[in-house]
Amino acid sequence: MLMQKTVAAQDIVQQLYDQGYEEFSEGRYFDAIESCTRAINRNSKFTDAYLLRASAYLSENYTGDAIYDYSTAISIFKGNDKDLSIIYANRGYAYFSAYQVKDAIRDYTVALDLDPDNAQAVWDRGIAYQDQGIYDTAISDYSVAAQYYQKDNNSLSIIYTNRGQCFLNLKKYNQALADCNTALLLNPENGSAYWLRGIVYESKSETEKAIKDLTYALFFYQNSPNEMAILFWKTGTDYYSIGNYKSARRFYNRAILVNPSYIQAYYYRGLLFLNQFKKANKANKDFKKLTVLDTGATYYKAVGKYLLGDDKLAIYYLNNFPNKFSSTTEMNLAYFDAACLYSLMNNQKEALTYLEKALYSGYNDFVSLKTDPSLENIRQTEDYKGLVKKYGAN
Image (cartoon, rainbow, N blue to C red; front, top):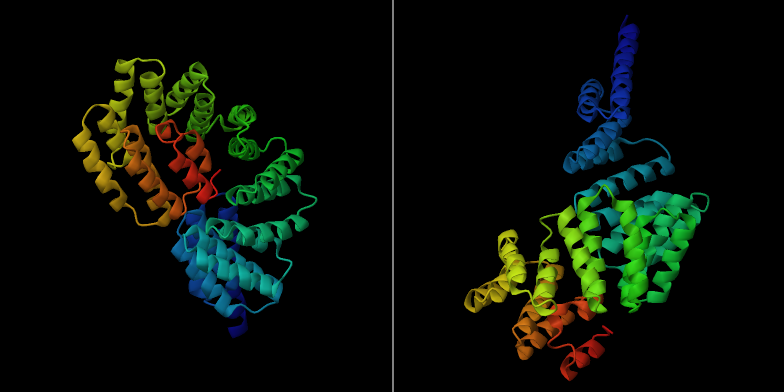
């Protein structure tokens, strides 16, 4: 009788797990969590139930609960190293999703120690290293990962795109361009590769090629208004940089059409109206929009106030917005923005001071450095050229 009860209890636990698996497969993640929880309540050593529940939690972005379940599964796991490697890699992904990137790298490394052929782990570790700005190591991981996906053109195209981004960040433009070209040979439908190659061409000052790629990339983002707005804005700025102001205005208009809250498009279009078309009324409408959209009272609030003639309030915002940021990336962007505003004010000394602060703290968007119209008042000075040379930003 006891044996029959035990077998019956095991059958119920398995049935609950199977039910949870079916619910998970159908995208019913909360139902799957409930079924797995009932199975675990009956058998607290049921590893697969923890793993399935962790996946369901992660699908609903409950990263802390997912990490807990993966950790429990690791602690009770009885099996081979290859399977344990997969669990560590999955927990690594949960850590990465929770923005605990160093913990993610640690788990990916353990996964690879357990199974050096865990292709997903080495790919994901490359992504994590890239996120941390450790580009050389990310490139190494992507190169290893590529060896495992030689028969999967879509995945291989993504890996080459990721590696190309790292080369771009290291200012290795020829290697970046080569990776973009390979990615597109593998998958001509890889919109991200066209976008990235456009940025590479911008960095190489091959603006017409950049415009062609960024425009083509738009076809792959028809259902993503935010991405379309960015692409329209970037293409407009490229046209601005080569003096094709009518095309620049057309692309800024399109950016605003697909995303009426896209603040950068209003700013650049306003500058275009003010400086090139001499239409102050239209420019002021765009600058007023900046002060409304910039609810964080950062750069665009400050520059909007200045361009509308309120110098004192612009300086007030300018002096305060760098204090809003804590990360290095946010700080160097704030310094760059301050340099742009002081340049617009024709205060070359302060503009150059803040530009050097930005470059010293790691600002590396050299395309914006070369093309942002806000810096036109300092771009031809010897001091500006000296900074560009000093920090390798040319």
